[in-house]
Amino acid sequence: MAKVPLTAKFLSFGTVLTVVIAVSIVKLHLLAMPLERDEGEYAYIAQLLTHGSPLYLNAFSAKLPAIYFFYAAVMALFGQSPFGIHLGLLFLNTATTVLVFLLCRRLFDPYTGTIAAAAFAILTLGKYALAFNIEHLVIFLVLGGLLLMLRAIERGSGFITSGVVFGLAFIAKQHAALFVLFGTLYLAWASRAVIKERIKRACLFLAGAAMPFAALCVLFYMQGVFKEFWFWVVTYASSYCAVMTIPDGIKSFFYVAGKVAGCASLIWVAALFGLLAAGRLERQKRVFVIGFTIASFLAMTPGFYFRHHYFIFLFPAMALLAGLAARPRRPAFTALFVLLFAFSVFQQRQFLFGMDPARACRDIYVNSPIVESVEVAKYIESRSGKDSRVIVLGSEPQIYFYLRRRAPVSYIYMYPLLEEAPYAVQMQERFKREIESANAEYVVGVHINTSWFNWYANAALAKPMFRWIDAYQKKYYDVVGVADMISRTETVYKWDSDAKGYKPRSDSYIVVLRRKPA
Image 1 (cartoon, rainbow, N blue to C red):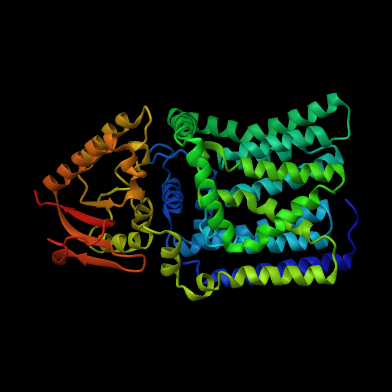
Image 2 (cartoon, rainbow, N blue to C red):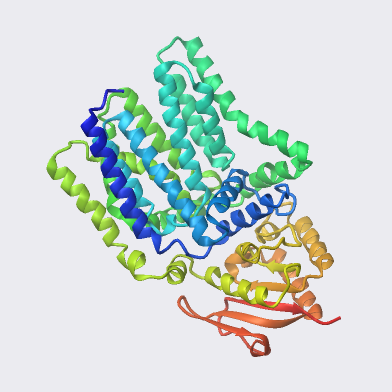
């Protein structure tokens, strides 16, 4: 790497710092947004973790565990609240922005690094990037691993260390295996050594990448939960990835890509020009840039599920490419990119500056009871003791987090119960037994399609489950609360006597039920 003049260092770091502060100020008033489903899962399981509960025992999840440890650390630092969790994301995004700058500066120059860092920071302002999802943690670790890998290639040592960081990304999400593959191939190709030495370096890298997962296996074996861990993150996760068809996946990709790119469309356009510019780079840099972009795209594709937050995998590569598009380093180009970044904020002005956290949340999560979960939890908390048991019949684990109580059931998502998979019926039977043995004081019934994995697509499996739930509720529970989601901006709440006999006006609503006196 060429030596960077001190003046250029201070100027570039100062610019990046200014951008980070400006973006953080814009985000600040939205940090109190209620937790969405995945955030609720991570936060709730992190709560269990801090109370000594082994993972994969009292709450089932197909996700690898790094995010739970990270959430636990964030909540210990900033508090067990949506604001504290999103504040942790703000600091993580800041650190990732700096890593984008450092990586791009190492590959090219401070100017390109500054533009790339600014582009990444603006991308994190998009409405679909404000939730603290796993992908944020993965790209932070991948970028750190890439920097260590480039340093190892330069010095001829440190391959295990860089591999370990990539391995940490993998134990955050299985999709990171695509980044591990990229790192292995690039390391073997780029090393200036004989074939035998290149193979040795790649093996050291892979050994390091395997260490975090191996350590987890040992830990869970010692805790007696290895069987559960392996089933959920390997066996079940594999069957989950086989559900989506390729045509449906392609259709979903273009639909979601349009929404995500629409938050900062000109940056994505600049990235396309940067991809063309990458073809003119010297060979080693060209292979890195194009290879990293391909790996970032492929990381989104396992299972052909294209959630909005999966596109976060692409943010560092898009930022790097945007930096390349500005490389002529002429004043006109700098001015153009300043305008580009300003427009990217301007086009989201209503969301970023004109909405409070609740309204912004409704704007993102249409037909999902994210705001309503807060009110439901407040109601139950105000009318029950700390030891009262609550069951959520729906995929809304954020309610358990708000209540700060351990769920008496292991299924905090309903999706596995209704998927066309060989385990669904068996899981339903276990779930019924858990419900019956819990004798919960409150049951929260979520009558919202997205909370039940589009149940109508597999009605033959869903209807018997719903009939059982309906009969169980009528036998043992009375309705004491209703959250009727009338529209995108209006929810009608009815509590206690007002809830009895109330008929929801919409198809999306939540009912709160209390156990009948014995």
